Image: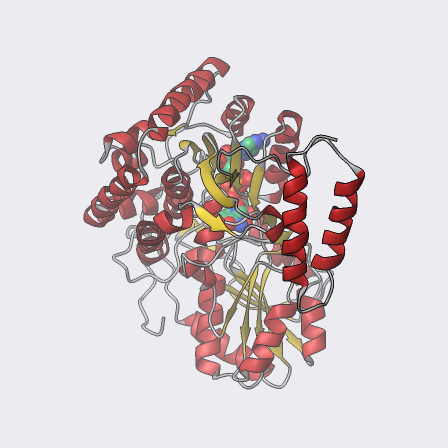
Length: 518
Ligand code: NAD
């Protein structure tokens, strides 16, 4: 970030083109997709997890080998810069696949659980079964990472997967190539292109569960459609993530970390830093340093890895971002840099630093999803926690302080799904940590064991042996049994050190009554 590159001329700027227009599918097409998925799911049910893991291993190797091709498509369709595509998309996926390869077998294996003394002699197990055919609907900001991590987690659990990418970044053909590395994988996952209308057609086919990542607006519509059909839904929605910077931090690291969190992927990340709260004693130095660092950033795409910030994927998103700057300026905010598009290409918005902000401004209320850095001073821990929790969103946050006790205390008081301490957006970097939000940021978890189990249904097994024994709680009910059960409760839930012995004696008496008639 410190290296300076001259800004690109218009000829050098990659002429990003959004993916080719997609046609929506018909109800018949959607039914055919789900019929094929049902057949695939039946075939999968016959096969052990090793077969699925083998597919993942081949896909990982293929993606490592063909990463340049994937990055070219990503940069073309999203306009992101090459380093964002390499690190956040490709490396992010590879880390996740590796985690699945190492951990999925154990996470999905049958679990033995305890059985209470009242059920003496029996065994209890939990089996994690696949759901069937699951539908994954994805957004345009991280088409490879969000798409593949959800698809592969669903598949490794034994589900057939129907995947609907965003119509803005379909990356047509890339996923198909990846899945064709293995016949079972290729057979079990289908990519269906189209707009929201296609997604609605697919939901009408009653998938076992819908996994949606996208805006809160669309999330509400999906929830309404699924409610009618009683389809469970996991929602990964938007955010208004905050960075909280106390005055005891190492300034250089905190400034660079916060700026990266706000500007990576040109701010088009659900967990981008969208509010920076800096303790008032550090505030002037932080703002000055942030401005100096932003001035060094290179905005460009179609680069060789030496641009810091790429373009905006959607022109409508760019309008939302600019509107927030216009609104803030009109209400008295200072725009210290940026606030406009790159002269050479109107789809590249300049990193924009804003101060003098107040809560009436859209920039502090609504999701931005663009390269804006609004910095707000605070004085006390209490105040910053209240400010932090004042939006409708609750995805993730970062807390910066040398005092780890304080950082931990604040992290636990934030209403959100994840907090990075003295780092930023890093909870997402560890595939072992579950990822998801609270409040309007959605519910359900991706990644980690918890995320994986979200693609399964647990089945409980209680195993007893075949014998001549008649359970005492079966018929006939008699006065004698009643009294013994009553004594059993008194014995078991007493505080006596002999309670287990007493319960065992009563239990034996009850057993002997089990086989007797009235
Ligand atoms: P979006 O809601 O516009 O679209 C997402 C997907 O939903 C697309 O595939 C779209 O075709 C589909 N869709 C549209 N209307 C639909 C309908 N009526 N029924 C079913 N599907 C429909 O979101 P977007 O603009 O692509 O993505 C940006 C949003 O996603 C931001 O709000 C961002 O914060 C959020 N996001 C969240 C996470 C997370 O993990 N929490 C990750 C990335 C992005």
